Length: 617
Image (cartoon, rainbow, N blue to C red; front, side, top):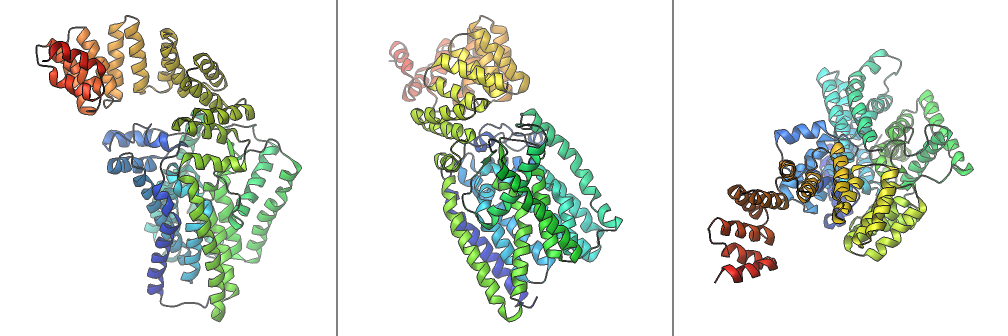
């Protein structure tokens, strides 16, 4: 290809342009908060994230799954974000952006190593960086595993090209190491060995030699345990087989999704953060098999005729989508834009390379102009698309605008309104969710939670019962336990809590509910054991310490009780209860309680005022 200028100067110019353009495209996101779509579960509800970084935590990251995913490295970065910024969403969004920048620069490096035109590499990387389908992977905190996966994935691709050119065995070892790191971010990286075959095609390597296939064997062997752990994790949370088993509909949906992914890259209109399953397979869906098969056929023809860029590009695109084409069915949606994060590079390389080939030598400005126009268009689309990530109402409303009968979107929007205290709007959308999908256990769960907020205990109980009948999961059992607890049906509350603890043996709040029930049922010894367990698994919750302290005081162990109340005050100096009860224990020990009672009164504890009038001058 004919267009080359100063290579070193071009590289620095490209890096500056790529980084600055990414910040422009995603500037809105730095003002965004957390989504109720997994963000809150990762940042607020995962003890292995907000408990700091230690040897014990590292062991947990590598031995546990989180929300159905085995992803120890992303969990580590969330924990690091928490150390740096606590629950400030800016820190998490900025971290996402930095990983996306790193992935973009590695795409640039990878494409540059494949061919001799830095401007081709630049425009491929720019399309990767700012295309609107990428917003889900960058703007959604919980999707960080996509960009982290891409960093190690494209690092492996770069080392592989270097290995092919230098025959350095060290580089091949680095390919396997980077591949393993990619697996530890997201199991979809298991497509890497097949993606390396696409690289072989791009590099004109013959595929009929044993050596080429054996080079990928370490990556395949390293991926087997990760695949098994991931499948087990998704099975544990009922993430697999939300729909009928493998059959004709599975093949039709796979072909439909493959073609739709291609359309979304070329014509990124009517994008959504999720695409529900169609209600039924129609003739129109079946017709999508024609272009899907045509795509595979074109790849084979291109390979036979030596059109290496086209053949490798189609293969790269397909193999990176293969794990998410619902051949093994999972989740509640057919498609998601985030699955295009790596796959899109195959298409962009094919298109940009042939565009520059068409206008090579003295006509290269035409190719650059066409590429710049497309990138500018996508930049504007991405900038405005990021509006949906600024709050949860925008986010779920954008899905309902395109898929009004999506039960997932309806109950999620209802949950967002419920969080804001708008119970009327919450009820409207949750009712629609139940209506559109009466067998959706999450819709019934949200209905039960809403009824509890509305003070409709029996309606809440009915909804939670239906949720549990559809799928007996710990979150529903725990919520029903709290409902039984509020209704003073303590034995039933304990039954549900025990079910929670069977699934989540480290659930501190479940032990607290159980201990409270036992204390009310006149079983102080058992209550003390369970308060101890609650504090063992969460020693930063003042309420647990207050209740154990009061039970210790009731049993005559006032010094130990004082120690618990002292810790509770240290954990939350704005908690009036902590000061109030510490003051009472001080008084029972013959000490002056007035300062504690005064602080309790300042913090809103009205009982402290009465005690002050009796005790203090």
